[in-house]
Length: 244
Image (tube, rainbow, N blue to C red; front, side):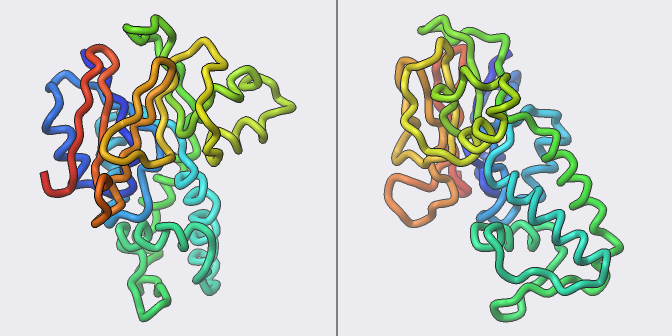
């Protein structure tokens, strides 16, 4: 079995299917988070990963959907007006709600579907699934060139690796892993594979880390628009777009 670590999908379902078609049939996929938002098919992406029981860590966009999506559900179920402007909606949450068929656009506003209460349960189930995603995965796999244990996270984790089990630093650790764009220094005896910060043209491969995010949602900008995956066992890189 091959293990491929997939970069930030951001709702680009066609690019994900194209990427899967390029990899060996025995590939097990692991995702670095930011499965959702910005692209048009976030609901399909989550469904694909859940149905196939692939592993993923939580990204900052999952965190935003957990927080603001829960508020959205509570507003709907309690017949309150929904928020029209929050951090999540500003950074792709609108597209995610559209992908679930929960809302439609009316000018700059989003309007709940007339029968939204009849089918909001799917969205609620996915929020609960996102809540269960870990902040990192320490795989029982050694990176062949370095011999180090592979750790998958959303952003670079080496600078806070030593506080991962310290309860008093839980919020610091979580904030760093979900949001920070710190330089991935060689501070821990791990091989870190992450995303979060888009790289142009190809994945960023160094002796102690790989940034596998190649900005698949960034359309029309040279060097971006690709979804990439790195195979731990072979060192191969696979890339695709929504076109091929």
